[in-house]
Image 1 (cartoon, one colour):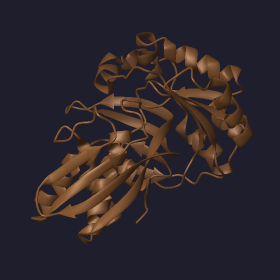
Image 2: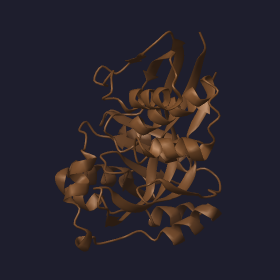
Image 3: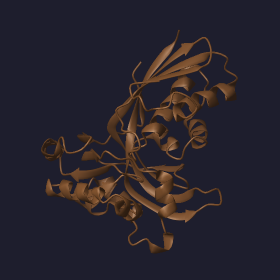
Length: 291
């Protein structure tokens, strides 16, 4: 039986602005998204029929409650595939962290099955399918650095000069994205990002300027709900972070550091205080095929 193995990378937000609410309940956003070197491994193996899913994390659903499972079902239905697929997810990206772990897994299944079953979809077709499953899936398919608009599906690639070094911290609790967006009062947003300015800093690799312009309007909702996020930001700043930001709707927080050594030293100092404390860098793809 044929099989394929894929690295699916997590993302952070360098900026996140909410600019409107749509009739379908989604929000229109303008945000800069960035792939990072934290990844799940997805192994797809052809079987005779059906969809099977196994994972190294017990609490992850093994059925249609899992977006990766739904991606496989969508492909089978769209192309009339009678063969089955076994999906193995080896998770490193934490659940409910604001790092798009589920969307990354979904993207890997869409891309992997396109390859495995020789379906011939191009990037645009894959992203259109991904949009029907989740707002972050199109970015996870493309990866790298991008301005995301609409519900997050309208993507404009950004040329990031050099690498950025970060320390990511994920606290013990999770956050409901729906609850955060429901709690956002558009007219009360205090500070919005300047995405045009940020793109210029990314193009020239000006790390300190990038750090000074990290803005996520959802912090105004999530931090009052979970004050520990503010404490994490302070801890990172105390360890030398040039700037700190919550990713997505939270609760994961990252600090942006001047270089690899500064990030590694900060991560070592903070190890053990939270579930996940890791130094890592940005990457230029959302998915990499391993085999």
